[in-house]
Each structure stands twice: as structure tokens, then as C-alpha cells.
Image (cartoon, rainbow, N blue to C red; front, side, top):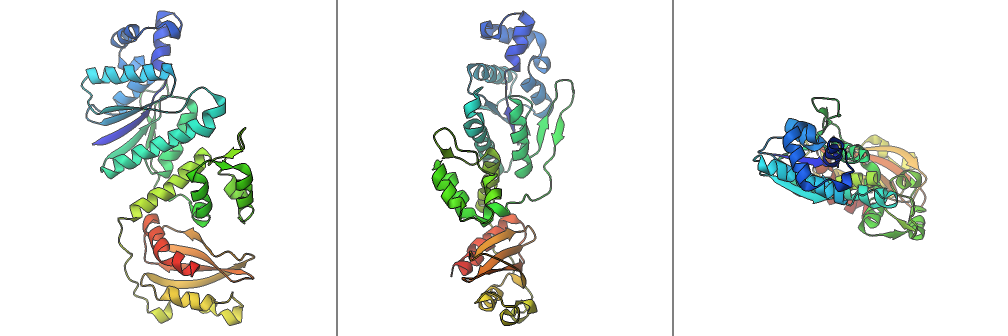
Length: 356
């Protein structure tokens, strides 16, 4: 079974109004149903045209519609038409998207992102193949549904009005960079949990070395001085959370075959290279972890904040080990594989050592 998540717009209503040569507001539901039957599903609306080419009557189809009376009417008519044609797995969900500039980015797009990710996660837990159909709805929806699809590795399909077959933006076999969100996880966890006042956000940002990069994932303060994650920031933060949920069901990585005494690189001679105090002791604790294969010293940074900086798909983890004067980059190679397993190993074993 597959789940087809479909954004829906108002093309059915505007097409009917054009055919009848009357304002959309005066078109009745009966006229829409008649238009469907007379014109055919392929020409009546963008949603049914795309679904007939992407989905089958055996698929689960989730129709996402905007919170306008026109959007609700069109989604209901599309759902009724498909049900009458024998499609059984149909559901509709309302988005907080409306033609309101003030709320579109701050709430509407973020709600779209939340629902998309919620539906993707639910379907994947049921072992379903997921496809996003981004043909209908606001044009801005295409950009964000495509972004969600790429980051969550779900294909996105779209049919341009003059095309006969869908264009597919495939799920790319790459791991998206979530290092910034992992490095400053406490900040993103804090700001993602509630509405935050701009003065408090500004105060917290002062303690973050990569302030400008973090700020790029936030929306400007609204009229009430409230700061939220941007829709793009929301997508990336949800991806981190999803990987952690996946990690709960994973086993620890396999033990390394490298002897413990050989895991620490000679570059980590803290006396010779003036590493922060306790560096060698920290490296020895890392070497005692079964899945660790190699510990390599790196360049220094002018900070006293210990933290994880990078979690790679190949099982490598880069951390900052610091004393009260400076910090050193340390790369830890492990037998973990994949973002989820590496994050799990990092959370379970590396974070406690950094905090000790």
C-alpha cells in the first residue's frame, strides 16, 4: 500500500466558473458535480488530473486543503467524486493556510510542514511507500512540500497544466546537514517548544558563537515581539527529532576490532601540543567505548563551550573539548552507520562524557 499526500487548491471551482461564465462565488455544489461528470476528472481539476496519473483506487490518499471556504468546498467535491468512483482510502485535513499575508509564513507554512511530516511519519511507521503530490494549492506550497520531501527522502510529484505526465523530484540518496541543530540543540529545543519573546531570544543568541547561522533559521519578530522557527528551520528540526525517534529502535553499533591502546592518535599529546586540560583523559574514556575506532586531535577554537559539532552518516562525530581558556576539535570515528545510529551513540555515550 502507498500513501499519496496531496495538496489541493481551488482549480475545480475556477474551472467550473469559467465554463459557466459566472463568478466563482455563485457556483453551486450541484453545478460542480455536473461539471465533473461532463468534463471528466482529467480536465475538471488539477487534483483529480494528477491523482489519476499518480495514484490508484487502492492507495491511501490524504487531501490537504486550505482554511478557506473555497478550499474546503473543492476538497470535499474531489473526495466525493473519487469515493463515487470506488476510491476508499480517502482522508482530508485542513491546513492553516489562507490568503492572509500576515499569517502565511508565520503560521500557515509552518502548519503545512507539521502536517506533512506527521503524515509521512505515520505512513512510514506502517511500512507504506509515501509520495507527495504537490500539483494543487498555493504556489508557495510547492517549494515547502519539495523541501520536506527532499529532507525526509520522499519523492514529490507535480503536473504542470500543459504537461500530460508528472514531473518527479526524486528522494535524493543524501544526508542533509543537521550539524547546526545538533550543535545548538538546547536552543532549538527551547525555541521550538513555545512562543518566545524577541528580547529573550536575543539574550540566548549572544551566547552562541554561530549566531548568524542560527538566526537564519528564525523568523523576524512579529508585531507582538514573538520569534518562531522559520518553516525551513522547522523542517530541519523535525528531521533531527525524527532521526532520534528512529534511533530508539536501533541497536548499538558493533564493537570495533581496534585494540583500545591503538585508538588514540599521537596528535593528542596534550603536553606537546598544549591541548586543553584533561584532553588525554577524555580521549582515554572515549577509547574505552567499544564502538570507537579512532580518536584524532584537530584545530583549536577560541571558546570554552564543550559540545558536539558534527554527526556524520559514516559514524564520525566531531566534538569540542574545552577548559577555561580554549577548546580543541576532536574527531571520533565509530562503527556506527547512518545518521540515526550515530546520533543515538552520540546521545548515549559522547554527551555524558562531555558533560562530566
